[in-house]
Length: 136
Image (tube, rainbow, N blue to C red; front, top):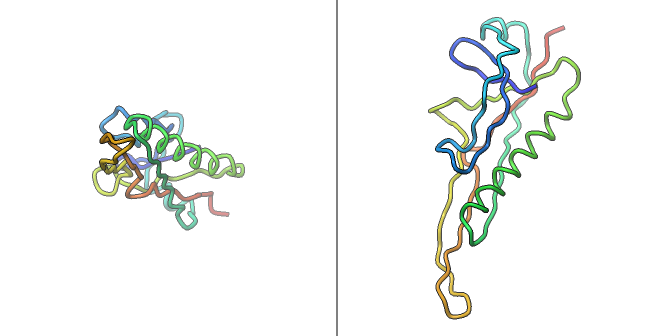
């Protein structure tokens, strides 16, 4: 399960990575796990954060963005699959402060005598997630 802080509560979320959205690296609240943040921080303990990033390059902007988000989604799913019973992944990035976003550059390359656009995308700042478990 993946959780994230919303105001004064910790709620479970599902990834919603969409290259066509303004906030490409997004999450949707599920609502099945809802705990006051103070209770979560006193009853649970976390590990060092994992910094998840991705990058891709190519000549079609939409496809490059999709590949970056797909790679990030795979890394997040791999971490979630490694969770033991009773553990959760906590998304530490704060909305509006250090939210993970896609960042891109566009350059022009000459291919067969013609100018072509070339795109490179990365996730910056990286998505920060840590494994939390109940205190013994």
